[in-house]
Length: 205
Ligand SMILES: Nc1nc2c(ncn2[C@@H]2O[C@H](COP(=O)(O)OP(=O)(O)OP(=O)(O)O)[C@@H](O)[C@H]2O)c(=O)[nH]1
Ligand SMILES: [Mg+2]
Image 1 (cartoon, rainbow, N blue to C red):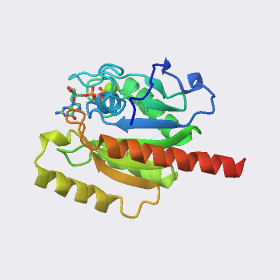
Image 2 (tube, rainbow, N blue to C red; image 1 turned 60 degrees about the vertical axis):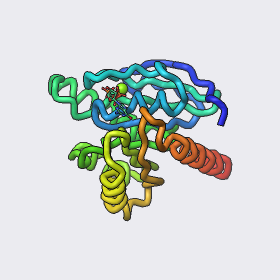
Image 3 (tube, rainbow, N blue to C red; image 1 turned 180 degrees about the vertical axis):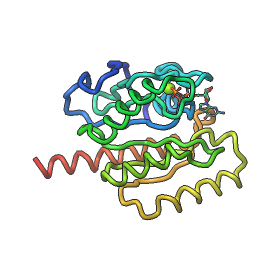
Image 4 (cartoon, protein in one colour; image 1 turned 45 degrees about the vertical axis):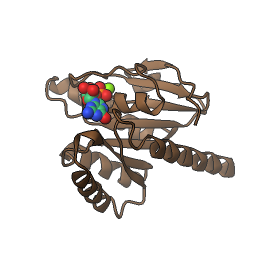
């Protein structure tokens, strides 16, 4: 694979600001600090495209990154971050859930889950909503470099069992932004989903 051509398009804090273009989007969602921005950078082989931080709550807006002029990677604000007000938390939730459930350009929601932890209640609620609304999703384990191979295998089995009956689930993958584990598989999954999305659009046009 060639290094993708990727740029920063826009940062959005209200759903109405989202552009109405024909490009399919692939979004990274998940709890705060799970590694969304880091994995996005690793995926497109850029060090500092999306801002990352050891402090949770770094990404507070919806950030759009067009790739190869064909599709758009979307970095979402994280949920479950304790140190924000209730109002702010509700605001983020409305923004993120509104985007994930209603955005017509969304081709795939990647739900990122820390490989070291059991999925949180927020993670489970999000997966349930996506399945309920039949929005295509994949579960992506992050920070796989921090767990032993046996524990990683167990975690993968746990998640696969969890989504076994979810028809909207496209895949469950283990990744690491640090070692780039799973990067090629994630790229291939995205290309597959985008191809499918294109075919569907052509046949329904
Ligand atoms: N060991 C390891 N650490 C990682 C990996 N990915 C991210 N991190 C670390 O996890 C922390 C959070 O990473 P971010 O990419 O900023 O997480 P985020 O999900 O975008 O966080 P918010 O924007 O706050 O929601 C940073 O300190 C990263 O260096 C990984 O694959 N392995
Ligand atoms: Mg971030």
